[in-house]
Amino acid sequence: MEENGIYGGYTGALQYVLDDLTQKITEYSEKEKQETGIKLVEHLIARIKEEDSMREKCRRREIPETPYSALRELNDAIGIRVVCGFQDDIYRNVELIKSLPGVEVVKEKDYVKNVKPNGYRSYHMILLVEAPFKDIDGNNPGKFFAEIQLRTIAMDSWAALEHQLRYKKNIGNNALIEAELKRCADEMASTDVSMQTIRDLIREDS
Amino acid sequence: MKLLLAEDEQDLARALAAVITLQGYDVTQVFDGEKATAELRAHAFDIAVLDIMMPKKDGLEVLRDMRKEGDNTPVLMLTAKAEVENRVEGLDAGANDYLTKPFAMKELLARLRVLTRNTEKSHEALTLGNVKLDIENQELSGTSSIRLASKEVELMSYFLRNAGKELATSLIYEHIWKDDPDVTEEVVWMYVSFLRKKLESVSADIEIAGEKNGTFTLLEKKK
Image (cartoon, each protein chain N blue to C red):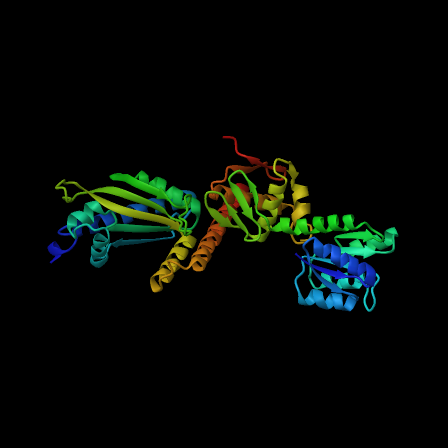
């Protein structure tokens, strides 16, 4: 049954990589907490992309619905979202993820600095993670893609609500709603920056 | 541009209305103070010209009522009394400018231009380097945009209007927080810090130089 799925026989390996990454992130954040008192990760969501949505994505990209497409052409079969308290924590997380053993950063996009036109803010990384399993190219240990999204609680709230609105109705052409959603994103970003500044000021004083 | 003209001397009023209309203003004319107040309450004007000596209610009362009700429309007072006391009284009551009769039409028009130019200016965008401050929408933008709190807008526009000048903490405090008895000069550093981070977050190529409790200067970053 599993062999016939979009991930072929690789579901177990994917689950291993997902758990392993989650554990490593949790470990370094606990260590950081002990050393600096800063909670680097507010919460974390980890998932293997659902069969249906992976198939749907293949169709949208006009590539065959095969394990090769799912594991090599696309790179978000494994997805982890790291939600942080403060903006600077995003960059500290990025730094620590880059230094994880067996992890190679293939691609990264800083949408916190280079904000998307609709107001979306987030830091995206595509990783190639080594694991003691055979991969689709036959290598063992194999390499598996994982996508990491890092954002603040405020950015995460905005993205979640914007997603809800977008999926309920086709708002693509409503310029006023687009503009107001962007204004909300800019306002939440403003709060993020103010909170960061306050944290910095408190630390300077102490 | 909508202008309210409150002047009870018929001949002068007619002449004024004709000349001002000719300059492209949309003139509403009234001949006593009560009507002036009624018009000001009912409609939005870009500027009001009020004579002091008017029947039913004088121009000073009209002006005081406006300000009391929160109407900040620019007001040019016309006065026949040339004494210093009267002019001071008018300005203190909230007038933006005054003219003593008799006056030259040319001067009246020039003063109207000054008063309306100021209101236009407060809504225009201020720019320096790659940064734009949209005051009306409280938006600061560089390569991306961010919203500002109202005090941040005031402070940022103060910096932009005085770019390159050294602004002392006490001067900034006086300018932005003078009417706020609950805060101390400490607030300046906090808001400068907010603006610095927000400028950074839109990848601004300008920066606020200076240190805590010292003087601050808005500058273009050295390339």
